[in-house]
Image (tube, rainbow, N blue to C red; front, side, top):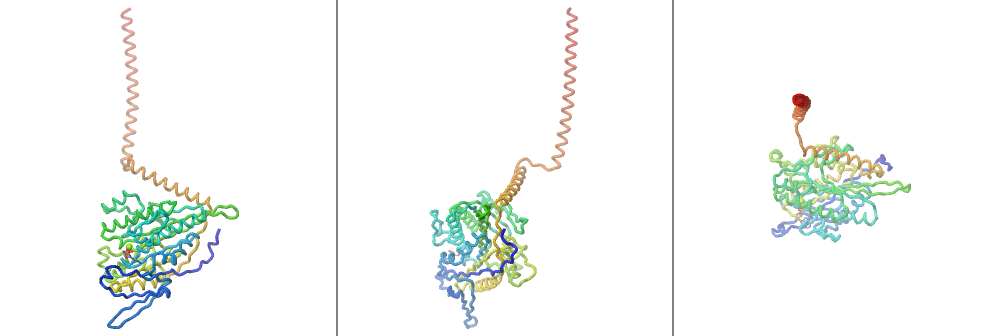
Length: 449
Ligand code: ADP
Ligand code: MG
């Protein structure tokens, strides 16, 4: 077993900044540029004119990706090492944080209209972090000839309700047509973490299998967006991929190494900076994004070393607790627009991201499991699922309240007793009839003779 109790080194959360190019709209309107990136110096400069005076502010990040940085550049420089650590047995999380329209989904998923993921194993240049990470994972595992298993989950968190983006179609239809979400509850897993009960865990055996799942999942998210009033700018999506790899020790013992990668596309940050000023009204309108607000508070509590960290106040922070001040390696990609029209939000994103650099985690490699222990765990899980399945089956069958059951049961018993009595009576009567018949025969015979 590894020396888990060694004091692990504290590591700061890695914070990257990405500034997208001008959009067609911004170009048409000749929007002035207020953001300048120096990727090499890892600096972002903001130029503002206040009362006729130009004021420049410069922020430094772990990495900076200006408007000309390609998907491939960001992936190779920032994500390849993270995925390698997942394959070494670490848990890692990447968050995309920023105002709506600045490229969070573009960074995490890619441009879905252009980046139709190829099934021939090639990725289009517009593909984002998720498909690239999936490809890297399978390419590495296959080249190592490893024995492994990979499973993925994909969920959306909106208004503190969790929806499974991988759930079968019928459920989505219900969601969209009746806005009746099949909500999934969060539960403690007994090991200090949480799990989402009923969340579809898809076991996948190839990258292309994940790609089609992803397509379905993000399509679901986009459909929901048009039908449910731009929901996606206020929802978070969490794609997780868990890898188990078999290893053999020199003594011939079989060990299982486990690593997990969480990829989070957060709700638009504008919901949060604006809500400060009109918190009361926003709360009434149900506009406050509790999870995003709590994420900010957790970050504040962590960087200011406050005693109480309010993880439990939202589902997002409960789900990703270990990524904030825990044993997970965490990276935040903050996204901004270069335009003057977004300046206020951009400054708020830059401040937020800059502050998040001070969060310290203590990354720790997951303890390797003996194969036999893992199998025992899986049997336990199977028993739990069987019990759940049985309970569900019973509810789908005949289901009556307990009182009615006992009333009907005693009626049934009384009835059975009466039937028994009647059967005895019947038997006695039959016997009497037989006796009478015999007597009758007897007397008619004696009459005849
Ligand atoms: P968000 O998810 O933050 O709301 P999107 O990812 O949907 O933003 O991006 C908004 C638009 O900007 C999309 O049309 C997207 O293709 C485009 N876009 C974002 N980032 C980039 C980039 N780095 N390069 C090119 N286009 C981008
Ligand atoms: Mg988006």
